[in-house]
Length: 125
Figure 1 (spheres, helix red, strand yellow):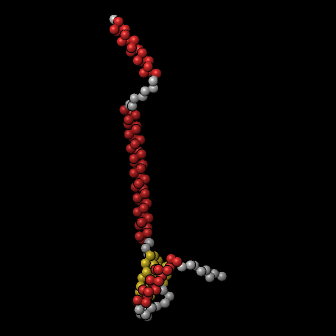
Figure 2 (cartoon, one colour):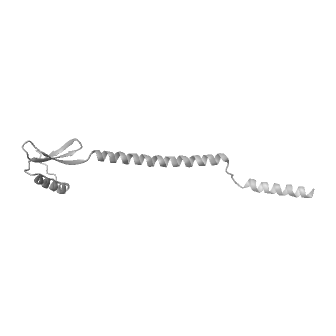
Figure 3 (tube, helix red, strand yellow):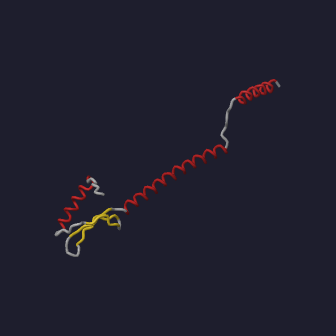
């Protein structure tokens, strides 16, 4: 009988000590909620990555479609001229015909080399 009393007494003491301490055990529901939050965060991160990749591809496609080119052609008089195009849009045309294709190509080389450094002179009235 004394042994039962001692065990009950110890159990009461331990219950009081454990009861006053704030110990929380993870329940199955807590684990599910934590896993769900982690999955949502992972999905959100993946969505951002996909969105960024889609936007980058769209920008690259836009740039690839809008490539500027220089076309050399022969006019009706048999002279070589060039036109600067962006896609199907003509941006500029040669104002002078050249007797040889090499002369026309020299002008194109000068334009390619120097046009980025050119200043804009406005002659407006």
